[in-house]
Length: 229
Image (cartoon, rainbow, N blue to C red; front, side, top):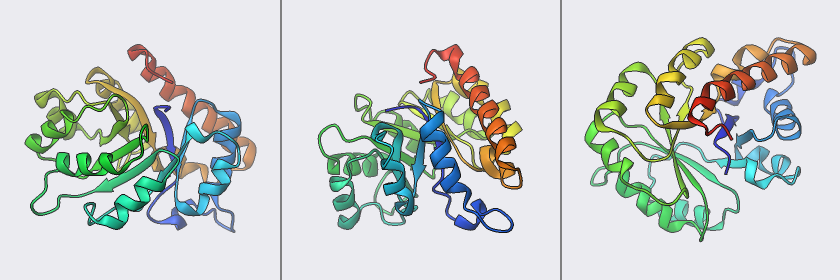
């Protein structure tokens, strides 16, 4: 599974609609799958079939809506049936730790099924427990790289395989923070609004050029760790 992803599963789809019409998610999905290997796309259910039509299943991740009840049986059933990697974002649940939820969701995946988990958590003890859930690359953590959280990862020595989430950072903030994240073990990115927000008003040629430049910039920042693939 690639560790280079563009997130198109934004909670507000209108954020990807250009003035005057046109869904940028569709354009980005086609452009990245067709022309920017090994980059993959994290897509909502509405774009899953379109993304999979390119026969690049290992570069398509199904982004489920943020889950307020990650322990529910219906979610585990969806995970059991999914044939692509799946991304789940979740918050604390009373009586559960984020690491307990991770183990529960991993058990629901079929043999070899990949899972990307995004715990909305800032508790060092909880994140340290998540770091200990090592699963031979079946699991990848998606973590924010705002400065205060990078300090937490450094303090606890977070060691689970993880990629950097761009929200709520701007493009320049994300680029500036990524070098430190790589030093702390980050091996990839799942980048959303920071990458594509200001592509919206551009014409296609300008969008293609800026998209290519930015994807190349991120790969070059990850290369010192030797894991930009």
